[in-house]
Image (cartoon, rainbow over all chains, first blue to last red; front, side, top):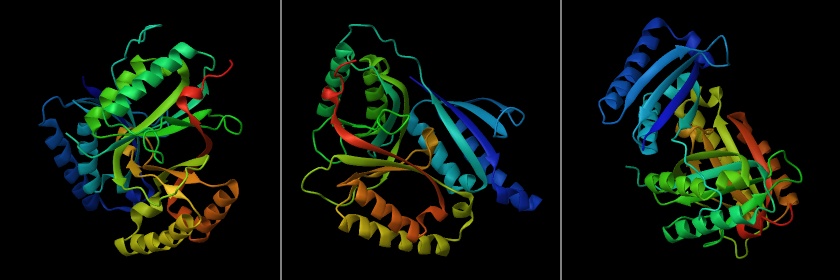
Length: 105
Length: 215
């Protein structure tokens, strides 16, 4: 079993006021956590795209993680690195469909 | 591996009433999960409870369950699905995450009313200094003391954002609508909502096994 993580995000208001150096420092800290996650078994970054023209978010990033605990761990490390303070996000968990049979117990 | 208790809150837009075979399957699965350490009612040990909001909300029913670990939650949600959850509950949204604060308040008898509170910390909170956040927390505590003194019990708080929910959720057990009005007034007066976007759902306690009824 693995889960897909669909991460939609946009900068918070205050991000736009930060100078380039401060933005760069933050992005490097987040990138370090991303690299740390990618080094773990069962974790893949599947793709990234812009959705600014079609939604209220700027970008979507799609991942595969081995468990929801791994999703939570990835998120908590990013959050400690300030990610949630500078980006507003909404996430979706994708799981394998489970068959339901009428009458099954 | 995440060994903290993990919560799962669900909100369903509709209930397919009168479908006893689906209901029985889901109740049986819940009873098995209860044996495995799940709690299906934040306020009554051993009860399997949902909260009915159909009469005044576009959502029919909600609940807050807790599993002993993230792995148990993952497996248990799959079991509930396999047992027919989505045949019984239309348009379910699950929001899951670890418990990050324990329950508060104890009451002798469970109340019929419950309110599910979802909230997101807003940009102002994210920009606030640690001192500003500490001051805000202290002001909110005044309101929480009033809540507990008014006979409210509060479930654990859960951290939902990573797995798709808003930032936090908690459920309150309330003696009456008047208590809800008074406690919300207290939180408003203490500027609780300055730093959050909040959404609330009110429901009446309903044992899951009685949910069927006539279609």
